[in-house]
Image (cartoon, rainbow, N blue to C red; front, side, top):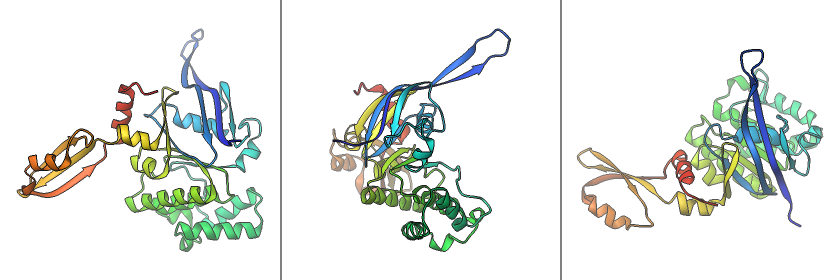
Length: 302
Protein backbone atom coordinates (compact mmCIF):
# COMPACT_ATOMS: atom_id res chain seq x y z
CA UNK A 1 0.00 0.00 0.00
CA UNK A 2 1.36 3.42 -0.98
CA UNK A 3 2.34 5.61 1.97
CA UNK A 4 1.55 9.31 1.98
CA UNK A 5 3.40 11.93 3.97
CA UNK A 6 0.80 14.68 3.43
CA UNK A 7 -2.89 14.45 2.58
CA UNK A 8 -5.24 17.43 2.47
CA UNK A 9 -8.91 17.51 1.54
CA UNK A 10 -10.70 20.81 0.89
CA UNK A 11 -8.28 22.56 3.24
CA UNK A 12 -9.28 26.21 3.67
CA UNK A 13 -8.18 29.23 5.67
CA UNK A 14 -9.82 32.65 5.86
CA UNK A 15 -8.75 35.73 7.77
CA UNK A 16 -11.20 38.31 9.04
CA UNK A 17 -10.58 42.01 9.54
CA UNK A 18 -13.03 44.18 11.45
CA UNK A 19 -13.86 47.39 9.62
CA UNK A 20 -14.12 50.70 11.46
CA UNK A 21 -17.65 51.31 12.63
CA UNK A 22 -19.80 49.52 15.16
CA UNK A 23 -22.21 47.87 12.73
CA UNK A 24 -19.92 47.12 9.82
CA UNK A 25 -19.31 43.42 9.17
CA UNK A 26 -15.82 41.89 9.21
CA UNK A 27 -14.10 41.59 5.85
CA UNK A 28 -13.12 38.02 4.86
CA UNK A 29 -9.89 37.25 3.00
CA UNK A 30 -9.66 33.70 1.66
CA UNK A 31 -5.98 32.74 1.86
CA UNK A 32 -6.46 29.04 1.04
CA UNK A 33 -9.53 27.63 -0.71
CA UNK A 34 -10.51 23.95 -0.84
CA UNK A 35 -6.95 22.74 -1.30
CA UNK A 36 -6.77 18.98 -1.92
CA UNK A 37 -3.44 17.29 -2.56
CA UNK A 38 -1.32 14.26 -1.70
CA UNK A 39 2.43 13.96 -1.27
CA UNK A 40 4.00 10.51 -1.19
CA UNK A 41 6.55 9.58 1.46
CA UNK A 42 10.05 10.38 0.22
CA UNK A 43 8.97 12.86 -2.45
CA UNK A 44 10.67 16.24 -2.89
CA UNK A 45 7.92 18.67 -3.90
CA UNK A 46 8.12 22.35 -4.85
CA UNK A 47 5.15 24.38 -3.64
CA UNK A 48 5.20 27.52 -5.77
CA UNK A 49 3.11 30.54 -6.66
CA UNK A 50 3.26 34.34 -6.58
CA UNK A 51 3.38 36.32 -3.35
CA UNK A 52 0.05 36.08 -1.56
CA UNK A 53 -0.92 32.81 -3.26
CA UNK A 54 -1.35 30.99 0.07
CA UNK A 55 1.89 29.00 0.20
CA UNK A 56 3.07 30.05 3.66
CA UNK A 57 -0.46 29.87 5.07
CA UNK A 58 -0.75 26.28 3.85
CA UNK A 59 2.61 25.32 5.35
CA UNK A 60 1.63 26.94 8.67
CA UNK A 61 -1.56 24.88 8.76
CA UNK A 62 0.30 21.68 7.95
CA UNK A 63 2.78 22.40 10.76
CA UNK A 64 -0.03 23.24 13.26
CA UNK A 65 0.88 26.94 13.55
CA UNK A 66 -2.48 27.97 12.10
CA UNK A 67 -5.87 26.33 12.56
CA UNK A 68 -7.94 25.91 9.35
CA UNK A 69 -11.41 27.29 8.81
CA UNK A 70 -12.40 24.23 6.82
CA UNK A 71 -11.27 20.89 5.43
CA UNK A 72 -8.87 18.32 6.82
CA UNK A 73 -5.24 17.28 6.68
CA UNK A 74 -2.97 14.44 7.73
CA UNK A 75 0.79 14.95 8.07
CA UNK A 76 2.78 11.77 8.72
CA UNK A 77 -0.59 10.21 9.51
CA UNK A 78 -1.28 12.80 12.21
CA UNK A 79 -3.96 15.49 12.38
CA UNK A 80 -1.80 18.61 12.91
CA UNK A 81 -4.33 20.35 15.17
CA UNK A 82 -5.30 17.42 17.36
CA UNK A 83 -1.84 16.11 18.29
CA UNK A 84 0.74 18.86 17.94
CA UNK A 85 3.22 17.17 20.26
CA UNK A 86 3.35 13.96 18.22
CA UNK A 87 3.56 15.98 14.99
CA UNK A 88 6.61 17.94 16.20
CA UNK A 89 8.61 14.72 16.45
CA UNK A 90 7.80 13.83 12.83
CA UNK A 91 8.50 17.14 11.08
CA UNK A 92 11.28 19.69 10.69
CA UNK A 93 10.55 23.29 9.72
CA UNK A 94 12.55 26.23 8.38
CA UNK A 95 10.86 29.57 7.73
CA UNK A 96 13.29 31.69 5.71
CA UNK A 97 15.33 33.89 8.01
CA UNK A 98 13.34 33.18 11.18
CA UNK A 99 15.73 31.45 13.54
CA UNK A 100 15.06 28.60 15.95
CA UNK A 101 18.53 29.00 17.46
CA UNK A 102 19.21 31.17 20.52
CA UNK A 103 20.92 34.35 19.34
CA UNK A 104 23.46 34.75 22.18
CA UNK A 105 24.18 31.05 22.83
CA UNK A 106 26.83 28.93 21.10
CA UNK A 107 25.32 26.80 18.36
CA UNK A 108 26.12 23.60 20.26
CA UNK A 109 24.11 24.76 23.30
CA UNK A 110 21.08 25.62 21.16
CA UNK A 111 21.21 22.23 19.50
CA UNK A 112 21.54 20.51 22.87
CA UNK A 113 18.40 22.24 24.14
CA UNK A 114 16.55 21.04 21.05
CA UNK A 115 17.88 17.50 21.55
CA UNK A 116 16.50 17.55 25.12
CA UNK A 117 13.14 18.84 23.86
CA UNK A 118 13.00 15.96 21.37
CA UNK A 119 13.98 13.40 24.05
CA UNK A 120 17.14 12.32 22.24
CA UNK A 121 19.61 10.24 24.22
CA UNK A 122 23.15 11.53 24.67
CA UNK A 123 24.42 8.95 22.20
CA UNK A 124 21.75 9.81 19.61
CA UNK A 125 22.46 13.52 19.95
CA UNK A 126 26.21 13.06 19.59
CA UNK A 127 25.93 10.77 16.56
CA UNK A 128 23.38 12.90 14.72
CA UNK A 129 25.21 16.15 15.44
CA UNK A 130 28.48 14.73 14.14
CA UNK A 131 26.83 13.43 10.95
CA UNK A 132 25.06 16.68 10.15
CA UNK A 133 27.83 19.09 11.14
CA UNK A 134 30.36 17.24 8.99
CA UNK A 135 28.01 17.05 6.01
CA UNK A 136 27.22 20.76 6.23
CA UNK A 137 30.82 21.75 7.04
CA UNK A 138 30.04 23.58 10.28
CA UNK A 139 31.95 21.52 12.87
CA UNK A 140 34.27 24.44 13.61
CA UNK A 141 31.26 26.74 14.13
CA UNK A 142 29.50 24.78 16.84
CA UNK A 143 31.14 26.63 19.74
CA UNK A 144 30.57 30.10 18.29
CA UNK A 145 27.56 32.23 19.34
CA UNK A 146 24.81 32.34 16.75
CA UNK A 147 25.12 36.15 16.60
CA UNK A 148 28.65 35.80 15.18
CA UNK A 149 27.64 33.65 12.22
CA UNK A 150 27.09 34.84 8.68
CA UNK A 151 23.68 34.24 7.12
CA UNK A 152 24.95 31.22 5.17
CA UNK A 153 26.60 29.71 8.25
CA UNK A 154 23.51 30.24 10.35
CA UNK A 155 21.25 28.70 7.75
CA UNK A 156 23.38 25.55 7.71
CA UNK A 157 23.00 25.37 11.50
CA UNK A 158 19.24 25.91 11.13
CA UNK A 159 19.14 22.87 8.83
CA UNK A 160 20.87 20.85 11.55
CA UNK A 161 18.34 22.05 14.11
CA UNK A 162 15.48 20.94 11.85
CA UNK A 163 16.98 17.51 11.13
CA UNK A 164 18.52 16.71 14.51
CA UNK A 165 15.59 14.51 15.59
CA UNK A 166 15.47 12.66 12.22
CA UNK A 167 12.01 13.82 11.09
CA UNK A 168 10.03 12.13 8.34
CA UNK A 169 9.03 15.41 6.67
CA UNK A 170 10.94 18.65 6.18
CA UNK A 171 9.07 21.89 5.43
CA UNK A 172 11.26 24.57 3.87
CA UNK A 173 9.87 28.07 3.33
CA UNK A 174 12.39 30.13 1.28
CA UNK A 175 15.44 28.40 2.85
CA UNK A 176 18.06 30.01 0.58
CA UNK A 177 16.75 33.58 0.57
CA UNK A 178 19.62 36.03 0.89
CA UNK A 179 22.34 33.39 0.57
CA UNK A 180 25.33 33.66 -1.76
CA UNK A 181 25.90 31.22 -4.62
CA UNK A 182 28.28 28.93 -2.73
CA UNK A 183 25.97 28.63 0.29
CA UNK A 184 23.01 27.86 -1.98
CA UNK A 185 24.89 25.12 -3.81
CA UNK A 186 25.93 23.47 -0.54
CA UNK A 187 22.42 23.51 0.92
CA UNK A 188 20.81 22.22 -2.27
CA UNK A 189 23.28 19.37 -2.57
CA UNK A 190 22.91 18.41 1.08
CA UNK A 191 19.10 18.44 1.04
CA UNK A 192 18.99 16.33 -2.11
CA UNK A 193 21.41 13.77 -0.66
CA UNK A 194 19.65 13.69 2.71
CA UNK A 195 16.31 13.00 1.07
CA UNK A 196 17.69 10.24 -1.11
CA UNK A 197 19.68 8.59 1.69
CA UNK A 198 17.11 8.88 4.51
CA UNK A 199 13.86 8.93 2.53
CA UNK A 200 12.86 12.30 3.98
CA UNK A 201 9.89 14.01 2.37
CA UNK A 202 10.58 17.64 1.44
CA UNK A 203 7.98 20.33 0.79
CA UNK A 204 9.77 23.41 -0.51
CA UNK A 205 8.43 26.91 -1.16
CA UNK A 206 10.84 29.10 -3.08
CA UNK A 207 11.04 31.78 -5.77
CA UNK A 208 14.48 30.51 -6.73
CA UNK A 209 14.42 28.38 -9.87
CA UNK A 210 17.71 26.76 -8.84
CA UNK A 211 16.23 25.50 -5.56
CA UNK A 212 13.28 23.95 -7.35
CA UNK A 213 15.30 22.40 -10.16
CA UNK A 214 18.07 20.94 -7.98
CA UNK A 215 15.97 19.64 -5.07
CA UNK A 216 12.49 18.73 -6.31
CA UNK A 217 10.93 16.05 -8.52
CA UNK A 218 7.41 17.46 -8.58
CA UNK A 219 5.80 20.90 -8.67
CA UNK A 220 2.54 22.10 -7.12
CA UNK A 221 1.45 25.56 -8.27
CA UNK A 222 -1.20 27.53 -6.40
CA UNK A 223 -2.79 30.94 -6.88
CA UNK A 224 -5.41 32.68 -4.77
CA UNK A 225 -5.26 29.70 -2.42
CA UNK A 226 -6.27 27.11 -5.03
CA UNK A 227 -4.25 24.39 -6.75
CA UNK A 228 -3.61 25.35 -10.38
CA UNK A 229 -1.04 22.79 -11.52
CA UNK A 230 0.36 19.47 -10.30
CA UNK A 231 3.14 18.19 -12.54
CA UNK A 232 6.55 16.55 -12.55
CA UNK A 233 9.75 18.56 -12.77
CA UNK A 234 10.58 16.89 -16.11
CA UNK A 235 7.29 18.04 -17.60
CA UNK A 236 7.77 21.54 -16.23
CA UNK A 237 11.20 21.74 -17.83
CA UNK A 238 9.95 20.40 -21.16
CA UNK A 239 6.92 22.65 -21.44
CA UNK A 240 7.81 25.81 -19.59
CA UNK A 241 11.57 26.02 -18.94
CA UNK A 242 12.85 25.06 -22.39
CA UNK A 243 12.88 28.67 -23.56
CA UNK A 244 16.20 30.44 -22.95
CA UNK A 245 17.64 33.90 -22.77
CA UNK A 246 20.87 34.30 -24.76
CA UNK A 247 23.14 37.25 -24.11
CA UNK A 248 25.85 37.79 -26.73
CA UNK A 249 28.77 40.14 -26.10
CA UNK A 250 30.57 41.28 -29.23
CA UNK A 251 34.26 42.02 -29.58
CA UNK A 252 33.53 45.73 -29.79
CA UNK A 253 32.06 45.62 -26.27
CA UNK A 254 28.38 45.86 -27.23
CA UNK A 255 25.92 43.20 -26.12
CA UNK A 256 22.56 41.86 -27.24
CA UNK A 257 19.93 39.80 -25.40
CA UNK A 258 17.78 37.33 -27.33
CA UNK A 259 14.86 35.06 -26.49
CA UNK A 260 15.31 31.60 -28.02
CA UNK A 261 13.25 28.40 -27.99
CA UNK A 262 15.42 25.32 -28.81
CA UNK A 263 12.27 23.36 -29.63
CA UNK A 264 11.53 25.53 -32.66
CA UNK A 265 14.96 26.55 -33.89
CA UNK A 266 18.56 25.46 -34.44
CA UNK A 267 20.97 27.09 -31.96
CA UNK A 268 23.87 26.87 -34.44
CA UNK A 269 21.89 28.63 -37.14
CA UNK A 270 20.78 31.21 -34.60
CA UNK A 271 24.34 31.99 -33.54
CA UNK A 272 25.57 32.22 -37.12
CA UNK A 273 22.81 34.65 -37.94
CA UNK A 274 23.96 36.72 -34.95
CA UNK A 275 27.45 37.34 -36.35
CA UNK A 276 28.94 34.51 -34.27
CA UNK A 277 32.45 35.19 -35.58
CA UNK A 278 32.36 38.56 -33.84
CA UNK A 279 31.25 37.16 -30.45
CA UNK A 280 33.61 37.38 -27.47
CA UNK A 281 31.24 35.99 -24.81
CA UNK A 282 28.01 34.01 -24.67
CA UNK A 283 25.60 33.48 -21.74
CA UNK A 284 22.55 31.19 -21.78
CA UNK A 285 20.02 31.56 -18.94
CA UNK A 286 16.68 30.09 -17.90
CA UNK A 287 13.83 32.59 -17.64
CA UNK A 288 13.10 33.77 -14.08
CA UNK A 289 10.56 31.77 -12.08
CA UNK A 290 8.13 34.69 -12.00
CA UNK A 291 7.99 34.61 -15.82
CA UNK A 292 7.43 30.86 -15.88
CA UNK A 293 4.58 31.24 -13.41
CA UNK A 294 2.98 33.96 -15.54
CA UNK A 295 3.14 31.68 -18.58
CA UNK A 296 1.58 28.85 -16.60
CA UNK A 297 -1.40 31.08 -15.82
CA UNK A 298 -1.75 31.92 -19.52
CA UNK A 299 -1.90 28.24 -20.47
CA UNK A 300 -4.79 25.90 -19.78
CA UNK A 301 -2.79 23.13 -18.08
CA UNK A 302 -4.79 20.49 -16.15
